[in-house]
Length: 213
Length: 222
Image (cartoon, rainbow over all chains, first blue to last red; front, side, top):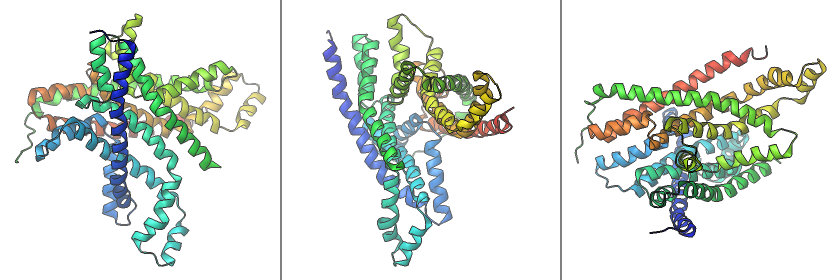
């Protein structure tokens, strides 16, 4: 079978949908888990914040590939049936949660102490204080690094091809094996990733410049 | 389900794990040195008077920062031979890692150069130093001191990302882990141990670089 340039491009673009989907799912999932980690990290209970710090350090100090392998081979051991897709989602979600929690922690710590005092003095509970005063401000000032991390996350999804998830990178390996045109295939793949990441990078920079003024 | 973790294989596996760890350290060390040099060159070229040079560096940085390392690695290892440039796997890995690290490093070093106040440069020129000496003896040491923590983090990140070079059969730590788990059928335990080794390497690398950086750059401007 012969592959034309358009066949290659079309197949790559179809596979890129899975890259986009995985990035979105991991970003949302990582945001939810990351919120829990953040609350533990900024807690005044020493053991809680210490464990959250350890959690973040573990994910930031080990390769993503190892985290994915551990999810892929570890979850079946505790009786959870797992496929490449679920291993990729779980691995990336937990990894993203650590990075997002660390970004948001920077935001929470940048909030002036007066805000905490003010929230307490109007009689807000811890939960309300967080929900109404602290977190909205922390999220607002960390918007640029959050988008920056999303770029990183899109690039991280390429590693899930190694545990067998059929996203853009894995599709490109298969197409390369069929066409023997690695220069074209990997060149196109690079351009597709670039097309996904570059607008986000620009947006992150825009947010950062706006935040500085 | 009852699964008992078994680390009995570990005593025979120490040798490949240590060998793999040294390969990863070697890749990181070579890339770190080459990457820092290229980053300094890149950052000064990005501040060149020639707009064409500035634009070329800018495009390089954006292209690398917006594509995955794995794609860059595969493009260099599988793609370049069709242009007649066939590279050994280890050379391809070092090349890909250096190109990747230098893109981030160029931005980091550039931020450091911008942080050195203009008066420092003018003072050097007023003393009659050559342009080259002003840069090497006055501006660069101060810039490096500011950005050394960020550079350290980037090199640690590069070491962790280098796990994927096992995919082009470079015999690094991950490669040895893949081989071990195929032999022992203890995939989870193998990757658990190797993940621990990576964690230790990243902690030690950070400590060593911080200590080394303090020694090299504290007196700095001699």
